[in-house]
Amino acid sequence: MLQSGRLRRLIVIEALQQGKDGSGGIVRAWTPVTPADGIYAGHTSDSGTLRPATKAAGGEVPVSAEVFTLRWRDGIKAGMRVVSRGLYYQIRHVKDLADRHETLILTCETGVRDG
Image (cartoon, rainbow, N blue to C red; front, side, top):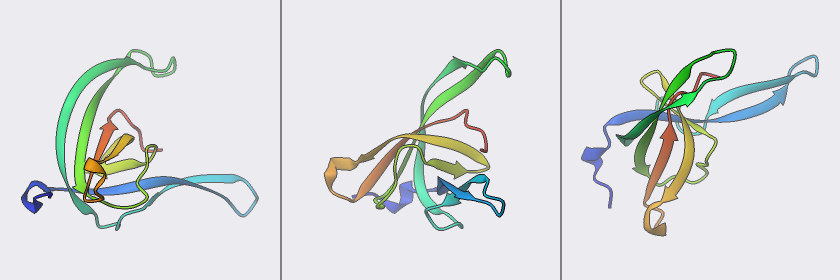
């Protein structure tokens, strides 16, 4: 069982939604799938590396693996993102610990822009 004292980081999980604007153009926006005022999670940093940036950006981008642990919630998937303290983390893997629907472990990656 997950101890509430370990859940000290306030996070919001968002999914990328796609729709159409008034002129029929495609609009993409991140929308919260958890309460907009946040849920509590544990947070640890796993490792870091440098990844080549796009040609436009040039150079390298620092990327690190971040792990968020939270109480189990339905519908959280890879491809969504975690927002915490003004930073964005791309969810790469979602694990239901011991397949008990009690604890979710989100393995995320930094270096994600707002968009």
